[in-house]
Length: 78
Image 1: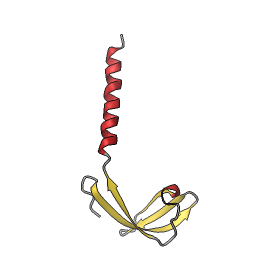
Image 2: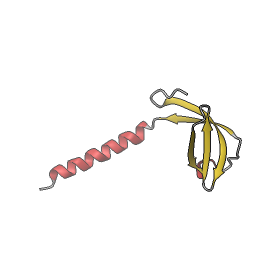
Image 3: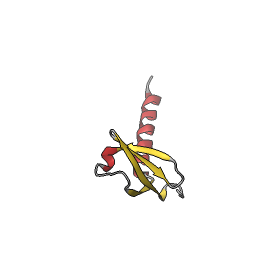
Image 4: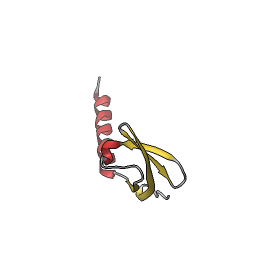
């Protein structure tokens, strides 16, 4: 698994089990992790999946702008 700065990184895993509203995955190194079932409602135990990670630069830029706007407002408070 190589996640190069989150640009086009991916990993493969198998759905080990479903516990309530959570899907439990096991990757090729026997590590487990969970995600909410709502993201993959048709998931079944034993399904092989690929998870792709991408950096959301537009959301990051929007968050940085909101933070800067708040900082500007704080600087103007007497």
